[in-house]
Length: 317
Image (cartoon, rainbow, N blue to C red):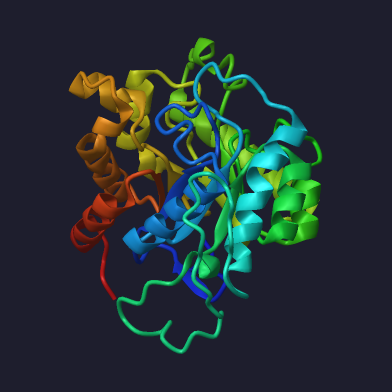
């Protein structure tokens, strides 16, 4: 596996520590935070909060992928995602004014050459943090990268849009390939596996090879087993238990257990926002299994979880 990836001056040293991808859903209907950040001001304030709490990547998504979610139009997805990406990136050049009703009004100015950035404990402004765009549409990926995004996070693993791999190859950005069956509207009726981990591994291996054949460098591919996407409660637990199986694919591993329904079932907790410590346990299990990136909502507590779990489970340099 490629040892590292550098984005916006930040080097991701795979296997040395766990990196946090903070979820920034700019949707009205995501499963746990729909409607919380779907104005520009609220989204920018949340981005600043996530980065201050320790997020290494901001994952901006305009299409809900909760079970049963309907597909929105291309225009609506672009209208949700692009203003947030553009505003975050303009923060590198100056102040961002926002006149939405709940606006925080300002993202502090910053320069990529900030002389403090090398100091221990330095917290960058959101404008300096890599941005991932959570989309299955090649045209959204292309527009978001043009606006300043750095990574494409495709929950379909490149299967929903036949142009996705070609566009990502041309853009030269990393891509996250996730395992799924069906679509968010149908996936929970497609959970019959003969060999869960074998089938996930086979799908991801095939998509890795297709991506490489289309021109995407292996060093820019990250995989995600898709906890909760066409997976039952028992299957989500099995993924965490058998995560090391996926290391044979030779690319970094992202896991997204945050607030998900399997945690709610264990805890008998119907409120996703009250699943923080269940998420912490799942994150610790993922780190023990060798996850490189965790996609999470509650960055501050998970940052502490990762620091301790890394000290326990990873060989320190």
